Length: 99
Image (tube, rainbow, N blue to C red; front, top):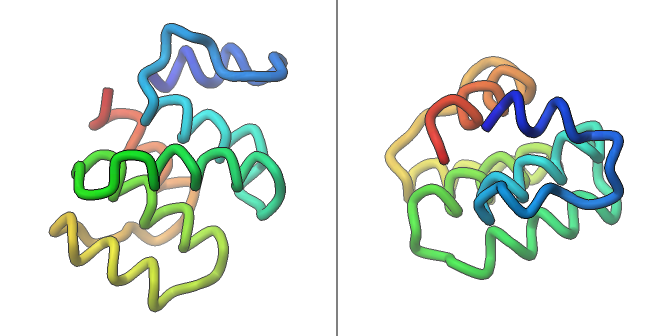
C-alpha cells in the first residue's frame, strides 16, 4: 500500500485500487499531515466504518494530526495501540500493517 500511495500523490484523488483505509491514508499524506480538505476527506472515511480496527487506528492518527491529543488517545485506546514518536513514523507503520 505504501508504494501505491507514494507513487500516486500527483493525482487529484486516490487510486481506486486502494482500500478505503488506504484512501484515508492517501488523503492524510496528500495533505502533508495538515488540517484542510484532505484531512476532512480522510476523517470522513474513518468515520464511515467506526468500530473497525483499521479505520479507528487511522482515525487516531487523524486526530493526532489535528492536535486533539485527548481524542487521539481515545482512538488509540480503542484499538489497543500506542502511537509512535512522530506522525510520519506512525503513517509508515500504518501503511505497512494495514491493507
